[in-house]
Length: 127
Image (cartoon, rainbow, N blue to C red; front, side):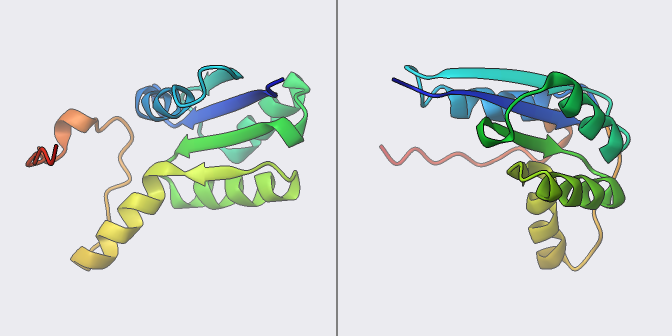
């Protein structure tokens, strides 16, 4: 019998990016019960923690994935979730951090910039 889990997608804007990534990952578990809850327009870690506490979900079956751009909010959120023993993944910040290191420049931290505003990939089909 499959476990039932709750996955929170947390965004400082609409949650479209985090929602797409979490939905894509959930598709790999077609026989499992996965509930996805998106939190939009988050401006503080405390908002997320307050929301999670109101939900009453078991931290053993909960995870948080986020696309928060503010370094302060990301750090506060990571620390708060670690204290609560809730696993989390910083989807956008980690990626931007690697690119920033390679480019030797700081990324914008402007919420609302979308995938359409990014560089178009060159696609190679290796099939």
